[in-house]
Image (cartoon, one colour):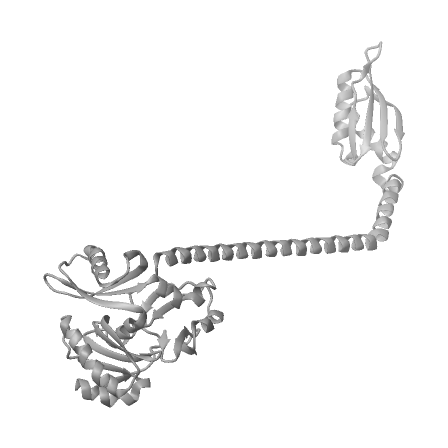
Length: 401
């Protein structure tokens, strides 16, 4: 926002609701302090804009833009394409609306904001500092606001927080005010504004002019300071080309943010994969070390188990040939079944025999399989061979379980 000695940069402090105010001699000094991502509002000095008060014979807001455009074209020596305009409603009655319209030449605006534009910083809103001060200190009723901008003194007439009329005076000498303020009051009266101002607001940096202003206007004068923050206003003089460019920059920043997030996520996943790979290798190496450490005891256990299996027929009574033969004879269904040969090794046993009929041979095999003393073996018998005397010759083989 413009000041008597340059510009003020206002920025909210994080968390505590207070604001930082930094004096800048030129807008070039603001470039390193802001970025294209900041929600920047540029407040213009009164000298850069034209403020007009219009009475429009309509109450329909949809008709305001076209009527304001026609009135602005009459008041300015520029074509409509060379300026940016905006307006605010001051008041309405039964038949008409009173409008505050503000216009700025695009070339002049680009000249003021050149340090920002050259560095890709486009404001979200371009407004007028006088409108912000009026909305902050005099949101209702009429007021006269006097404050310095550069080497000039601004006098702005406001109604319901909207700028109706604004003038700049060269210098801030009391004699200058005594000549200019009455003329301002006369201009306000010619535009239909009551020149009796209930509120007279003087910037605190112009304290020495307080008695002069009170003497001229015969009204008490209130001192005001820097607005922290200034009240938000609807007035926006941002050109359409700037809006489009800002939208492109915002979209570009959003894509850059998304790409950064995607890159970060990919890097995180890749890092997790590397950690997982490292952990897997470490776990494999640890398991290999444990296997190598336990290999001798494991081998000893395996060899011992193999030896015990080999010795089992010799030391386990269930594998004694006498015990097995006893159980085999217990399983004979009758004297018509005879065992003719018996063979036993560490791996299997075989029983050769002869039965009067094949049925007796099968009956013998079934009883052997069900014998409780022979449950350590799997028994299997092939089909008996029929002899010339119609007897059945069979072989029953058993393997340890």
